Amino acid sequence: MAFETRDEQGMVTTIALVWAFPLVLVLMLLTVQTALWQQSNESTIAVAQTGAADVARSHLDIATARHEVTVALSNLHLTQIDVQLTSQGGDVTVAITADAPGILIGTHVRIHATATEPIEGWRSP
Image (cartoon, rainbow, N blue to C red):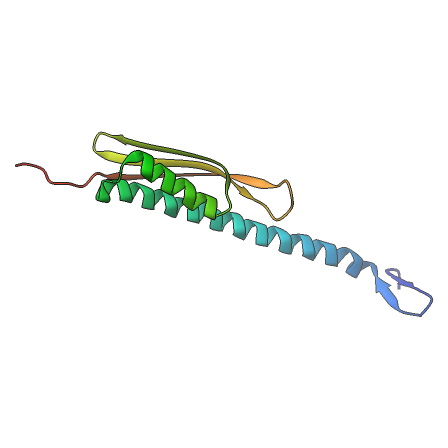
């Protein structure tokens, strides 16, 4: 066969296997990496929504809420965390930017998440 080579022990190693294994390995690595980055993105969105809800419903002050959001993001192993929490016009907005690390050293993806909640409370008629 044109695609086979034999070593001293008579074992056959096909060129197709030599090319297929690294290709499958890289595809598996990329699949796992994409899943991890997607999980980081979804978790960041959930933290932003929780932070906005804490301020809007529990009337938590902005500085405390920003600290709680930053701690929650640190627990997710995100780096370069930037939390912008604003209250304007009856709405609370949490905007988060962070880096999610990759499997390979030096790789990361930038994550952006924003959540807005209306401030709840009593209104006089």
